[in-house]
Length: 438
Ligand SMILES: NC(=O)c1ccc[n+]([C@@H]2O[C@H](COP(=O)([O-])OP(=O)(O)OC[C@H]3O[C@@H](n4cnc5c(N)ncnc54)[C@H](O)[C@@H]3O)[C@@H](O)[C@H]2O)c1
Image (cartoon, rainbow, N blue to C red; front, side, top):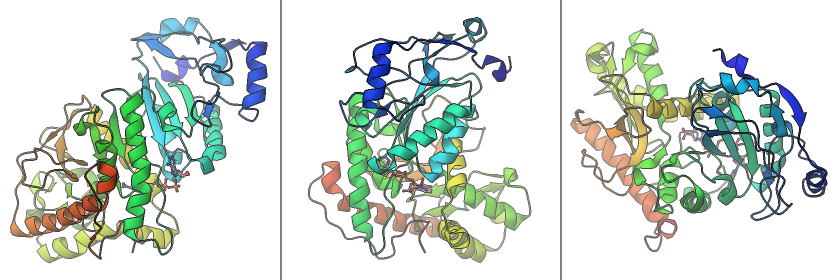
């Protein structure tokens, strides 16, 4: 059945006069499907049409509780769908809740529409989007919700917006944590770690309190490895394995450069690992990578190029892009988040793997435990992953890995106050930079 056929036909509204007065009193400007949660425990309206049972889409249940409750609805999602559609939507899966922070930012502006279109979780997977913004971005967040509303995505069953992670993360099964503060002029890296670390400490606590017990968390906001560590340490009731730092964009960049050098299309490049930190110390691994099934070092025989130009090109690609275009790589980052999710929800092609920043405890490579480090992973497509064992190392690779490992250990010491591991000591190496910095 074509997805387009499932687009609901609207028949009638269910708004009660009591709800209307509440809405006009408390949230007069929100004339769309979202529920602004302006402050914790404050009144807010909520979309309530939803898929509520496995394989069964139900008509929206418009609720008529008192203004203090969370379940008032308004906007397009308060309309009743054509009940005939119920029969046609029985092949749909159970609705999943996806929380996205920094939802009014540039990356989200690409990502949200990909999520809602079905290209990430599939054409039979209805979704609810829970969008978290900052106080400054709440108006913009409403604009995002309006655009989602106007896009008429059949699979998008709920949209909610707010600035309180304890409300927005409720029952989240995926948390895509993009929102973070950029490094301001003259700001030390240690300050950035602290400012953004506090955001991720709070969001970790919120996930721990209200999200699904098996929520999968992908941290994008920088410095993403250490932010993921902070988030994880503040969410002790969620498996540590569920936390990822996004290094997929770096992997994609590495694949593109190897393909270019070898004169092949990039789908011929496989087994590319990014080791370590999403920073300029990251290690794009050409030793284990393959082109058309052959080791890269047998195809590209210029070892000097691999060790120097290629490695630096990948590490600094983000900064070069900003110089050219005056803005950062939001679109390709959104694509790489899609790739990262799809790598967890679809089985990894035989013999291949993907990179993700994950917790090092129990890793088979001898990398220090207790940090979030990008390593090669395989998934059965169940949302989980295992680390790849059949990788080789040489002195060059070991030395590079040691450098990025030292950087992450220094970052960890610098945020000890946010991970519950004592007093912070910041002795960051001088060259610590994000890929978007020159
Ligand atoms: N890991 C990667 O590969 C990768 C790649 C590119 C960018 N990034 C990082 O992703 C982050 C977002 O990038 P962007 O281009 O979308 O930035 P952006 O400035 O366009 O958007 C960030 C949004 O987050 C919001 N925000 C700030 N604090 C928040 C909080 N506490 N809770 C919720 N929202 C909050 C801001 O209001 C803003 O709307 C940055 O930290 C950037 O460095 C990571």
